Image (spheres, rainbow, N blue to C red):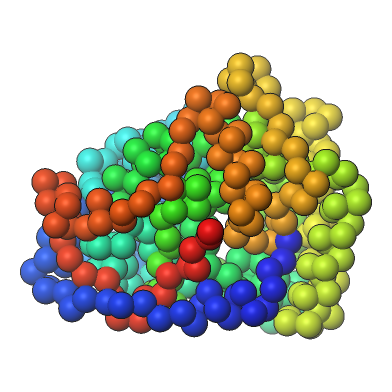
Length: 378
């Protein structure tokens, strides 16, 4: 669940060559960008939309929207592309529907409870013109309550202290889909859809470029709402293990105790003892969610598993607090996808995403200054 601090430092400090970008090309990129937001009943979507300061297409992927959300959308002054799915809470399916509802080349994934800092949309579009996947930084809000502050610290540790393709904010060139199994997100696992997306990027050798100055602001979380999220992540973990897109620990109890203990020690070191204690509760909620799926199949997904679905067993499984795969884990997941009929090979020449190679797709040049790539896996 944790990465070595040296690895994390290397990931975030390794420089990257960048190109100067002509603003006219950035304007063309803006016109070819869609911001995709999965939405249910969160009225903070109004603030999220207001923070989008470029003329991009705004795609709302509804899953179980409330009447208040429908009224807000109908009365909103900005043009909105709206699609809807019936599978409530399925973020992977919502993002897939959003991607299908637009023909834009670049997809910027955002959450309804977050807002963009000024200029961030343009900054991320500038970078994605030559880099296939770009990740910004989340600034977690907090209130005066203790749990709100601890939630911010744990989120920083659990999602912000290493570079990954977890969203938001994440923008990518949809041309990568042909190289990562032919689909954007796995609709079976419901939660952890971006984690599974990240694994396939690593299998294809597609780097994630990190833009720490591309900031979004996450609204403060209160009470124990965050535990519900971790419970759901645990359900997604259980589904992903059963279908073989995540690895399954061969000695599950021993492995989980080991990696949880190691992660909590690192959390206490980096974020304080209080954050580690709260994180222990979140870990308990996570594993309870996994057990809940194994016993009850709450989303009724087993009947939809493909015939080739089976577990990918490993003694050293993938820690939950990280998306970085070891060479052995890469080999095991690659084999699991191959056995399921999806051949994901490492791309030898990433220039296929460069504008000189895909000019017909309308790409433009340039990665923004300050971009840093995730360290490539062997």
